Image (cartoon, rainbow, N blue to C red; front, side, top):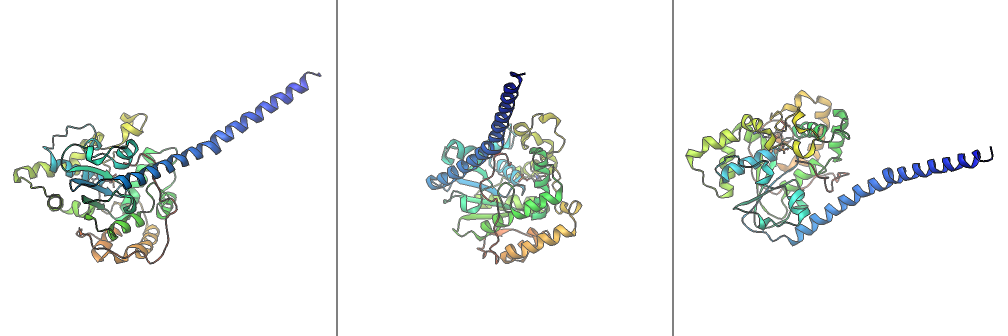
Amino acid sequence: MRRTRPRKILAASIGWAMSLIRFVGRDVLKPLSVKLNLAYLTLSTHRYRLVYEGSPDDLFIVTYPKSGTTWLQMILYQLTSDGEMDFAHIDEVSPHLEETLVPMGRKVSDLPGTPRVVKSHLPYRDIPKGPGRYIYGIRNGLDVAVSYYHHSRKYWPQRNQRPMDEFFGQFMAGRVPYGSWFEHVAGWLRNEDRLNVLVVNYEELSADLEGGVRRIADFCGIAIDPAEMPRILERCSFAFMREHDARFSMDRRLLPKPAESRTAFIRQGKVGGWRQELDARFEREFLKACDRWLRDVGDDRFRILSGQGSGQGGAVEPAPGPESGEAADDRGRAPLGVG
Ligand code: A3P
């Protein structure tokens, strides 16, 4: 009897200590390590930008995620090679700046070939700046939001089985990796440092792939052999890329059982596909924000970005900033794994 009580007290104390350890590990240290990891990434990106020695041969493909990055990577690959698809993943030929070069301290100038093509989702303020070329891909924000929704459900299933309206709220508030779409697009279109930027619309590529490919080639100073054009167009088509989805998707890297993946990375590829998933409520909210952020980018571009129609991209005219100072909450560094 006398022994039982101290035992009970001891057992309760051990239980309490275990809960404490679990609480510290899960609720204190884990968020801290995520925060530290983000802080590390932010600092390494800043450092990389400061020590970057730019060259006219550097070519950056930059987009907000889900705006047609992979498509642009494929166009550049087809333009700069025999297009034989001799890679396991497209990131081998145009590596992801902030996921591979920055963390490993690898320089752009160490990449083989000319031009040296890298892809990035960095906002304008964070991109390494130099005399190279920058292709900025834009897509209407509602299609971006829907594409991002499917991407996050597929690749971060534990965190992102939330319904569309919840995800859309986070997207609008910039509480997704790479922050606010509005701020990203406005910053790049504003192009305050007068970088050599070509803006390419996803919608333009969809309507006239050949015209878009020629514009990109002109901008990069690449002469296209007319005999090669059919191959380039065929390989940059949705059908061809979809057929080779494994070379573009992040399945092998991020999914435990890639073979069982049911949603393709080259998913739907539609202009205005958002209409199947978002109703007028979302559209109204989005248009209101577009009015605040993007009204000054020119009628054509505004129509495309806000999902109201299609039109041509072009050389970047500096655009004034948003009238409202509304900023994104989580616009800092993105966790790794946004393709
Ligand atoms: P959807 O999810 O709307 O289908 P990113 O490469 O920036 O992640 O963008 C992915 C989006 O680009 C996906 O949009 C994908 O289907 C689309 N895409 C990729 N290649 C394409 C192509 N050749 N034609 C049309 N859309 C393409």
